Image (tube, rainbow, N blue to C red; front, side, top):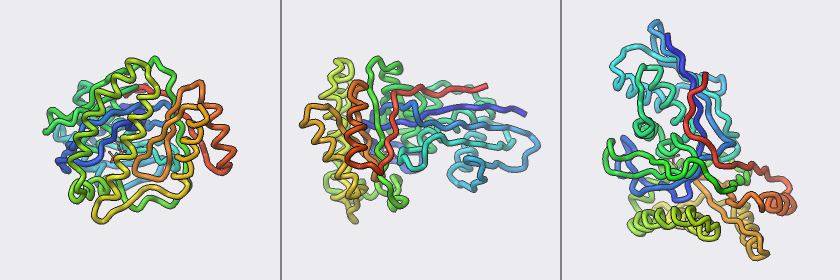
Length: 321
Ligand code: PMV
């Protein structure tokens, strides 16, 4: 019997991954760039036991028959050359309402804990390649801080690389939770609709790839204005692309737009903040630590009912005792 516990934090993409060139092993169309967050994480315990008759998976104490998780475990078993089964117990410390990609921390933690439980000793690069097969955004959650996913074109050359693991810049991300029904269009289906039908898709790929060296330079220069503008513009391009798909779709809700406008107003008033959005209605605000309080106060005044969750840069994968 072998028990391994791992913790992985989620990440927010500043230059988004939006579309695959290979949907089976998850090879993205463009490179992406993210910040790992400290506030949201998944703890996963994997028990390898020769006496188990099949794999099992529970999330927050509830047994779940997830074919995606079982397929992932089959792949790890095959890599390890072993025949035994595992019991997987995950606890998600990503508030389900936060609309943050919990699949990122979930598959990064599962990749780390399951590979070790099956007796593999993978490098972080190989863990990143493995996590990628569970969920694209998980590729980047192996590393802390600012991370790039080199898209590549096959299983060997598609993995994440740390750009700055120890962020020496007081960057914050505030998730503004827009209460809504569960999203109708998953990232998995939304992004491929865009790949297959948007006449502007080729331009998105070029533009996203070109933005990565620019955002890296802004980070090295600690130029928050350029950093924020590049992030916000990339997110808006992704969401604009969704409106050009067939059928067209959008993750914006009226309140998402109101929050984005409130951030623009704050900027006009001299308080720097930028926004980004993923495959859901919540708005994530990027700011410097010195402005976080005043931004949160202004948002609370305008939208007393919304929940605000603040994060700082977070760590990469950790094995727990
Ligand atoms: O890997 P997924 O299925 O969680 O897709 C992530 C898609 C975005 O969050 C919108 C962008 C990204 O790069 O994380």
